[in-house]
Length: 330
Image (cartoon, rainbow, N blue to C red; front, side):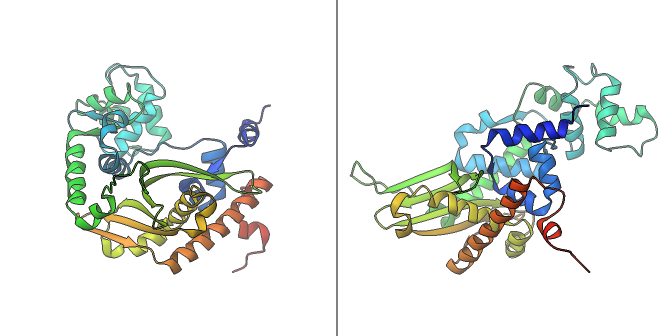
């Protein structure tokens, strides 16, 4: 019998081109076994949570508004709930039905069962009725013809209004001011939604990520890196949010990626990192990370890379490193 997990693992390692992103490295630190499932076996659930999609849309509207129609499908009417969207996304993998009416009952029931949704409803007919509705039909038609995130008109309007709040904030917009000179060789470079990749010397994997925005002033030897965060809490809670979601790891990775683009005189540059935060009440604040904090986060990244090296080289993802290298007692 073929061991499919082992076969997928061999294919993963044979490529020799894996790069850790913030998401994948953070997942490895949280649960090596979950990282193995999601990134090596590539058996992961596509996230369709509304707040995640709204965050991506706000990023796009602020940094690359010209690409909104390319990256999102705007569906007429109102989008279904998170759970309904999960079911419809799963169903789309198993049927080519153009409408929900044409979709076989067993496809709906199988998706509901695999996602463990609406199982408290005793009758199959009741479960099916949750999915096969007139309101869900427009969304179904869009996801059947799209590989991008689907948002409704209300979401687009709400996100557009939140982006305007950001644009009306002078502290935010001062970061994005276009500086022009009369010289052909402008000393200031700006980059938005920029993909960067770095090799790690002596390791078989690297780092990569998309940077929201960064500015390089080659005359003043200054670099400013900005990352936009939408939060369901308040700006007052953001310090706790940084710890909870390990945003420090993301900042450290982005600093490393940008640093590696600066060339031989990279050490001559002063790098500054700023979080632009808009909270659930549309309060906006720009958090600058201090040098001491950034140094601490860089050390944390070094430790995270050592952990990644252990798991990657040993191919052991069964438990976190502290359980594999030491006897843990209570």
